Amino acid sequence: MSQLYLGLMSGTSMDGVDVALVDFSSPHPHLLDYQTFSYPTSLLEDLHQLCTPSDNEIVVMGQADRAVAKVFAEASLTVLKDNYIRIDQVMAIGSHGQTIRHHPMSPHRFSMQIGDPNTLAALTEIDVVADFRRKDIALGGQGAPLVSTFHHSVFSSPLHSRVVLNIGGISNITYLPKKGAGEIIGYDTGPGNTLMDLWCKKHTGKHYDAKGEWAAQRSFSPMLLNSLCSHSYFTLPAPKSTGRELFNMPWLQQHLTQHSEINDPQVIQATLAMFTSRTIADEIAKFPDVEQVYVCGGGAKNEFLMECLESHLHEYEVFTTDELGVEPDTVEAMAFAWLAYAHINRIDGSLASVTGAKRNAVLGTFTPGKI
Image (cartoon, rainbow, N blue to C red; front, side):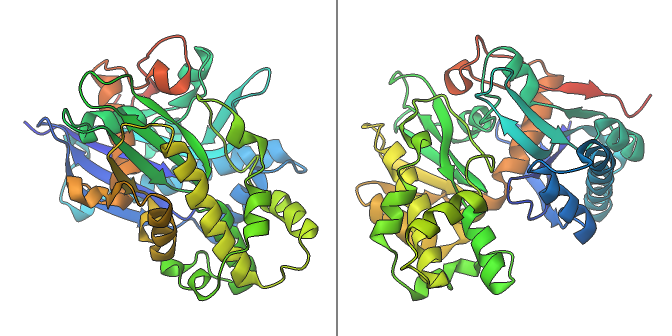
């Protein structure tokens, strides 16, 4: 009997809503379809506005909360229609929502995702599991990264210690020790694509640097790289997580002001790619038994970024998750389908060793769509 779930994910880059249709009826999840849907331009503008303090925030947030859910619902129904699947065949939707703030270190730590699950459930008539981060935060954790448990379930090896590296807007790693070698550890290493995307948009009008071709035409600046790497986040011990609250255009501009002699946008783009790769590699080096690194997320398509990463990780075997049978783009959306599956089946979706919470926990809140 099939166990069909939909996973919905939109990350820090806000480059689209990823939808994964996954069958969990066998031990290894089977991806049936994966599609990406863009936000309408006006909604995308509101979402970017909500990432920083501004006027009339509550009204903008309330409207965007429902607008995001409507985009999620339309995307979900499109994928089901394309695959000739009825809504009553789907066990649940796992919806990450859209993060607009992530403050895991404040006195009253919080992480806020919008995309109203009630609207999503009403429009699709499918049960929805959402709001995955706040239970972990209530237990003293960071609420991130949440993909590590899925990484463990799908990518672990009894013979080899591995790192699964997800390069989205923010990069995170999951250390998967071989059998008996230690506990699973995961955390955000720092920027992934977010600064590169913002810089590329500012100077080329394109949402991202396809294959890293724009950056690849120049050499990086060692001085600027060292300046960027001086951020205090990189000296914090795990568990830790971050977002655009720390790594954003104003922060980058402060460093560029200090290095006004660097005025070639492509040199800066090349440096940002090297910044992402170096900060990732520095963290992976903290796990001396690692033999293999598997890369997923949108950054896996950036050929220049992958070259930079491999230059730092030359002593490791570096692959994409294609080698393990999962396309790199699909991993995060599949993870949220799995988190919905875990919620329905009362399986722990978080690992205290990853997030720093008091204990593992079943994550998410349940919103019925069929009654």
